[in-house]
Image (cartoon, rainbow, N blue to C red; front, side):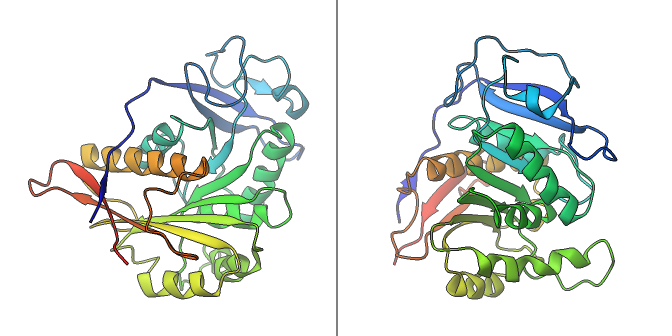
Length: 280
């Protein structure tokens, strides 16, 4: 087995604002931009820290002093931007890519429309992502876009519910099979995730035309319910691995034409996390 080390820590800045959708019936969406002091991609002349600033879509890309985002990411059902797992993951990813997270409590279809609205406002974006229900919206939004990279955290592939609020998550397997060969997908999840069983994920990955990778978090369920410090540590570390993957660095993964797996777990003391590569 081979171990990898986390990249050195960087100071991550957060910038809160609101995105004014092109839908006149929709309120502005809370957004949070994660970036380094000197953004790894794009340019910035000055960073505004004014929170909750309403902006028209056409103005968001021009002369506002904000870094240009590389990744659009959203939360799971009933969650929000201040979710500890989402916040830590975005911090880890922001060490190499500027991340724009948005909050939307609507349906999968409405969230997919928000992805597209933000992509129109920020054409610098090259990747979509989301956690749980947010990952379903990310896949749907990507189907008719030029985005070719997806980061899917705790995707509900094994969801079998029938409630109105959850029925739209049943489309995920079909949407994944529609992704074309030029799309790359990073799955992230726990080995105890009851909504994403290993056998269901393995089967859909075999059937997908898109190439996929897999980061498995040892001992984690769908909500990554470790004690808070552990949860933040492992989600931030996984975000750093995702950042390397987005940059085209797959050295953390087992080499294979269609699969690559990383096991993120704990040392013998149960205090320090580690990453171990699966062997062929």
